[in-house]
Length: 170
Image 1 (cartoon, rainbow, N blue to C red):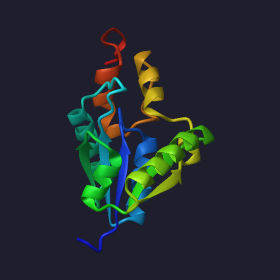
Image 2 (cartoon, helix red, strand yellow):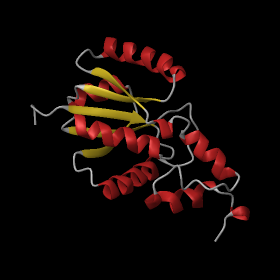
Image 3 (cartoon, rainbow, N blue to C red):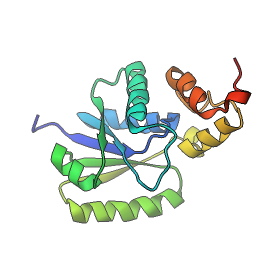
Image 4 (cartoon, helix red, strand yellow):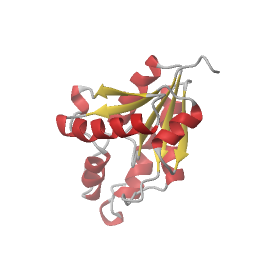
């Protein structure tokens, strides 16, 4: 598979949203193989375990029928993983200018650590500009309807975890 163009799409995906799936789907059209990389971030306090996040993403990928997309877990430097799998690109989704500043710094650092891959920025679709996992978690914590923000195939999993039991609707 040395001639395949592999891209890595890293993130915490806690939980995966329509914003994530939009970027993953679009990346799958540009590359032969896309690895959705669930990163372990010691700074963040995730709502779902790493294994649960992989399971949720796999459910979504099954529903989207993206045959060239796989999921993996990494607890280390992104540049090391990208080099290890022979990827030519790191895919990052951008919602706003504020995202770009941070992601640009990370792209420069990753290029120094491993110059064999380029960072590719995909701008979000207009309908997902405001959407983040944090927004989903906040709405769910108040019992709000998150069905407009996350794929239906994982809605129940997310609701059961994030909506407080005393306000869950049956």
